[in-house]
Amino acid sequence: MSREKVDMNRRQTLAATLAASARIALPMGLFALAGCQTPNRAIRLSGPTMGTRYQVSLAQAVAPDEMPSLRAGIEAVLARVDALMSTYRPDSEVSRFNAARAGAPVAVSAETSAVVDHALRVWSLTSGAFDNSRSAA
Image 1 (cartoon, rainbow, N blue to C red):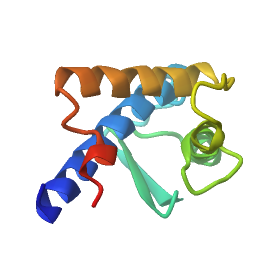
Image 2: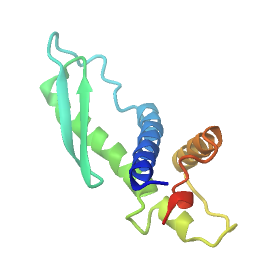
Image 3: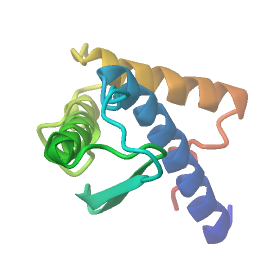
């Protein structure tokens, strides 16, 4: 498989993982701010996370006194995803799973389990096209 195709597969796998991670964040109640709106003022929040940046755009404005708690909520969810699923943190659930011997049980959170289930569905639906271990040189 060409280097470009491997890079494209990795980007697509990352996009699928991030989409699954977003499905984790929303049920955690991040955006339950319907009562805090100001007409005609959308907001954007951004900041560093996991070696890159995040950006959140809301169609409705939030009262200025709600901004710190909104930002803290977003950053708490991103920190949770990082703590659970980072491959760079040896204490993350994913790193502990990767370090375990084959077949050994590893306790993981419902969030990590949901992302792994999604990854397995993508793997199955694509006949393993996103399995980077098969394309390693």
